[in-house]
Amino acid sequence: MRIALFATCLADAMFPQAAIATVELLERLGHQVVFPSGQTCCGQMHINTGYLGQASELVRHHVEVFEDCDVVVAPSGSCVGSVRHQHAMVARRAGDGALAQRAEAVAARTYELSELLVDVLGVTDVGAYYPHRVTYHPTCHSLRLLRVGDKPLQLLRHVRGLTLVELIGAETCCGFGGTFAIKNADTSTAMLADKMSAVIASSAEVCTAGDSSCLMHIGGGLSRIRSSVRTVHLAEILAATEAS
Image (tube, rainbow, N blue to C red):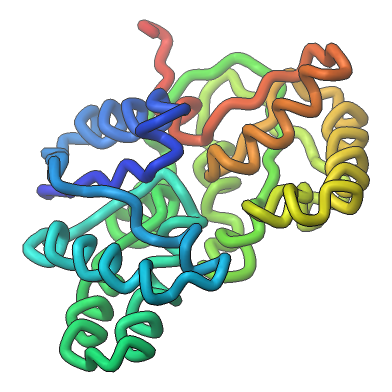
């Protein structure tokens, strides 16, 4: 299968290892991965902060870049959630019904990584090896907007050498929420403290998730209290092998 990578801003600017791991994993499974070089921000941060007018041009550009692709994958439940649930709405608010229809067509072919693997490719054992104690944080967008369910857990359970440990209160938000963490810093910090306590209580070596944004938030908090727990994107775990 020929799959287009939607890398996302955060991967491009701060966490490229998540995008690289996505490519390595899919190529190892026998698929061709292409990178449409014209891709930019999908507009999620503009939409979430109320700048729908500015976001409409980003939506248009995203559609133009990806509408000829049969399948699109992103290592981010948050950005895929925006493509699926916000792009057509933004286009309609701008009075562009034709763009909304094009956006819906692109959205129907866009998947978060675990969705693509389990639902489209029919794979739960990707041949990964990762000898560590790991706990999984289901990010809000993947859990509530995309409803990926236990797909990431299915994939993690098939990773050789990995010990999957329960995260108490796993479905509770970590407190990031993009600008929420800035505008409501005290509340965000309290939510993060609860999440860190649960991660540490799990006795895991690694906390994983499908969104680099949440991992950045959790990992930043853990580093400030000098915890030994690391945050690693799901794609990196699934891309790992004994050879790596």
